[in-house]
Amino acid sequence: MKDLPIFAKKKSALVKIGNIELGEFPLLLAPMEDVSDPPFRALCKENGADVVYTEFISCEGLIRDAAKSVIKLDIYEKERPVGIQIFGANLDSMLQAVDIVEKSNPDIIDINFGCPVKKVVSKGAGAGILKDIDKMERLTKEIVKRTKLPVTVKTRLGWDHDSIKIIEVAERLQDVGCQAIAIHGRTRSQMYKGDADWSYIEQVKNNQRMHIPVFANGDINTPERAMYVRDSLGLDGAMIGRASIGNPWFFKEVKHFFNTGNHLEPSSIQERARVAKRHLEMSVSWKGERLGVYETRRHYSNYFKGIENFKPFRTKLVTTETSGEVFEVLDSIVANFS
Image (cartoon, rainbow, N blue to C red; front, side):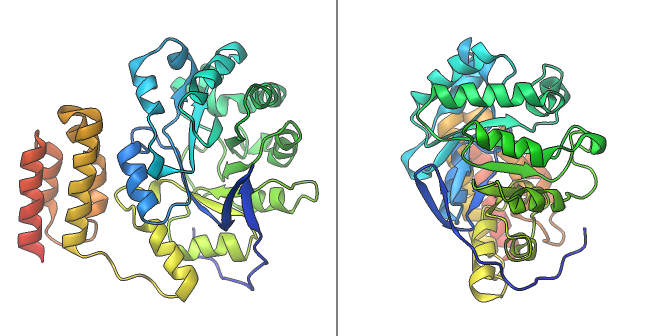
């Protein structure tokens, strides 16, 4: 996608989800499997994310008390406002899951109607629900009735290009009580290929019947693109996903660009290593040594992106088995590249 021209800024409104005030054009951390855990959410929050969402949680897993699902309910006060995202296709299971989620006291319950992964879609959940808009509306309506928390939805444009009905979908979800919608600018068929098409999201926002916040998601990976979404399309906020992996500073970079028109200076090697260490420490504290070390690996390439002759150090970071050894590698990176 080419970077797009910025036109005169459209008037920004103060954004609210339910009674939660988020200011003008909030930046939201997207729910990402094996990424949006408490350590990473904390880092993004410290660096300017206005709302953070958990990894998506299986409703069936929650009601079976599956450990992998239950651990994802962990939230911390410093993250707020925080949304817990659930996915499922069976109404009874989803309602039981909502009752369980409420006990963790999140600020928002988000429904995933957008995950394109086959194992989710094959069960009629995630983006699979885009084949049955009536059911999508019915599930949302009953979940809204079940909880006092604001309910939001994350979805895609449609199942495929021939079945894009996002303007109708957004209206119907709003009418049954959904209090904000985040739309990924691709269909399920596209997965993550091609460019996100924000024009449909703009049409949702410009629909005279819409009054809830409309957030753009997909390919918002530079401050300029965030500004285009805000100023040229007039959307209410941006949900940031892959651009934040290994780069929790992205939110700060966008806000600095909004405020000054200039790019924030890149983080120093010392700062990158410091944050990588802190990320690993929090992950090990939360998940245990083995899983904490393993699941932090996906972030290192981006933490140290753009550094010449870095490959041997990257290899060590993603193959080292203990946190102590990773800390030693991070120290050696500072010594070699400062």
